[in-house]
Length: 505
Image (cartoon, rainbow, N blue to C red; front, side, top):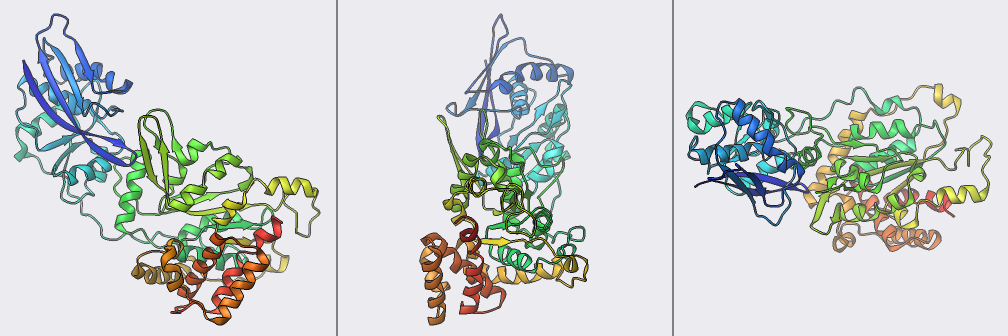
């Protein structure tokens, strides 16, 4: 009887948990191969892949029964990433290798022994570093992302035989050399620039405020007024990702299997624009087995753009309320509860009515009831969670054809970066100011108090809308390099809350 243990990891949410792969071999006439420890179908099917990989790699297959336990046994194991540690555990039980305690292994095996990439390797590397495991053996396509974790040596192996050689003669192998960047480069905005959008000065100013304070935005306007053009250029004025933000964003995309092969850290903020036919699981996350991140989590530290907002199912939109407030998505299942980060800037757009002409110079064919039902798909509580409501009107011909000397995306980004630097010194972006700090950071003079009181009374604002007006005013003051929020800043912030009362009442 021979017993050998290797280590691997399983990903739940975006966090990885270490798994002990215990291999036991004993005489048996039937040469059974049994995997226990709550394996899913992909893990159970690894039996055939491992047998073929061992034989085709020249190691042979033991004439004994094999039992593999994936511990702890009370959590579900998914995916083919356990192929490599399971096969090395069998080789250890056969006496081919003698020591694997200092390594963590992950990789899917092909029938010829080749090592294929898997999901979530960056999360596994982070978990290994926290637990003091300093050596990772991973597929070559996953090596760049794993090497982003400081203090962990990453070895890329293309074949099962190469992994065996590394364990037998580790001095002959060198870890992947990847320097961890301390800052991310600013994205090149040359292809999509705010200068391409004619007119819409008010909308551009509102988007600058939104980028500076991480505020949510709702754009209302007829078709062809430039809402989508503005949305696509919005990421170009956001500040570059910090290393911590890039690491967390890359983890999510790695777990979802969307990280390109051989990629390291993501260097640009994500921009996700799901179709209005998306389901609640597609937007928030879920799926069979272990839940996967949805679009709102894939947009973490970036932009979630929902075009034609009323076309989305109402139940899907209502599920956005908790992520927008908590900046995370919690998925509860019978066997587990997972949380995905979802700190996004929601950028939504819609027409004022189904035909799109309500409130414009063109003839609107929609009755009042039709318009009410159309806009009624967006509830008041959801509107309350959107800080800026702006109108994007149709452009008159002179403005469409005239010269536009507006600022470029690079110029706007410079102002946004300056405002965010001030907010980082406080410890949070303005959209996330805690309630207990709101009165201190957004203290008003007598004129400001009068403006805010008038706005709350006349517009019937909720307590949440009151707080969000103050946060937007604080951002406008930061863009103005002002230490205190003045009546001028507050008046502009109130202006961005008026459209919901015009259209929804």
